[in-house]
Amino acid sequence: MEKDSVIILSGGVDSTTLLYYQKHRIALAVSFNYGSNHNGRELECARWQCSELGIEHLVIPLDFIGQYFQSSLLAGAEEIPKGDYDNENMKSTVVPFRNGIMLAIACGIAESRGLKHVMMANHGGDHAIYPDCRPEFTKAISEAMQAGTYERVTLIDPFTMYSKAEIVKLGKELGIDYSHTYSCYCGEELHCGECGTCRERKEAFNLAGMEDPVPYKSHS
Amino acid sequence: MEKDSVIILSGGVDSTTLLYYQKHRIALAVSFNYGSNHNGRELECARWQCSELGIEHLVIPLDFIGQYFQSSLLAGAEEIPKGDYDNENMKSTVVPFRNGIMLAIACGIAESRGLKHVMMANHGGDHAIYPDCRPEFTKAISEAMQAGTYERVTLIDPFTMYSKAEIVKLGKELGIDYSHTYSCYCGEELHCGECGTCRERKEAFNLAGMEDPVPYKSHS
Image 1 (tube, one colour):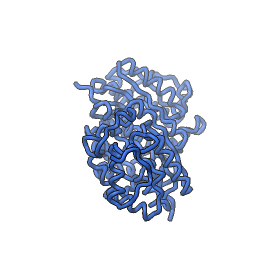
Image 2 (cartoon, chains in turn purple, blue; image 1 turned 90 degrees about the horizontal axis):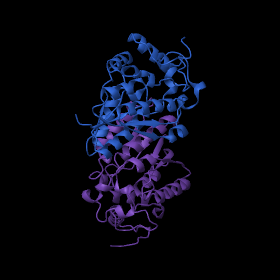
Image 3 (tube, chains in turn cyan, blue; image 1 turned 30 degrees about the vertical axis):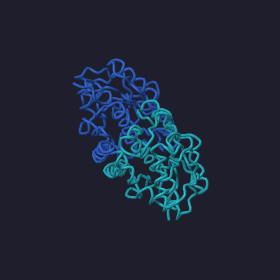
Image 4 (cartoon, chains in turn green, orange; image 1 turned 135 degrees about the vertical axis):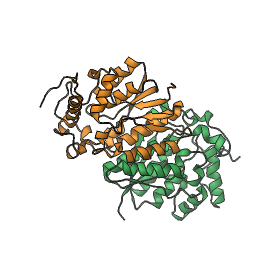
């Protein structure tokens, strides 16, 4: 199959699974460094996985997000709320319109390279918290990408109706080494095990009946 | 009236006119530096106009565009085609999905600041050449901005059905000093007078029956 797509790759569980799932179509992976606590560790993982698969990997710095945007995700590990991955707890971690910005840049790169699609690993569990993960958003931005490019670039988001547990089950079938993925919003060496994204990750592996290969600081 | 909007300001004729036209609603102007030939002179003009009006002005560097995007606009003055502002001549100057990228970033800044709207000065004359200026694009991206933000940020583009001549006529009524605007894609001290954007500018002032206060190198 033709390699006709660019993927937005964070280095977390979801986008890494999409990378392996669609590797036959992916010409280029793009990661973004927006200066959050956990970006450094995520990017190391993204680089490792691309190198395993022999896929070209770009990192786009978005320093202006750290400078001008409001989000606890950008404010240091102590600002990250502990507890479940639910609406109230996680809302402060939202980086305004982050997916809109990443998709627009990836779309411009796709058009520059003659690629037809941008892939993103938004999934069902994100919908409640992040407005720029919901189907209403992804449908409209895909229409904007098509209308705004000569080649009518489209968005492909195959996990939009998956749960995170279904994603890691798929990843197991694909033989993914999840020890090279990073999820913790605190950004330290070990996953904290207590922030919303750590809890969401642990729950997904539990529901899938799989062992999570990353070590945690806390198992509360 | 409440200052509830951020404007995308290039420092050219169209966005400068929109700045004055909507100054009572504009809390913040955002310019982008994507490393094109003419960005430096445009940004000086944008800064001057904002300072005249006492409007806060941010410049967001987008170095990745110069690094990874294809466009003659990024390749040096000698690559800019001379001649009319028509489809074939100007297509090489398109920066892929530029308006999509600028709108997405401005939308994130609006949401961060509690502002409700992003203003952009796309106009009727852009439609033939730039896919990301057409109503099909602006409608879809405004829907994506609304769906992707808690505050349902919307796009306002009052000039979408104006010609450039109508824009400069409006600017005359508003008393704008167009000597502090810059349009030439070559980016030199004087407007070249021969590239597509210089010709489009001269034609607009002619049609409006106004004198263009900027000096040109050539009057061909």
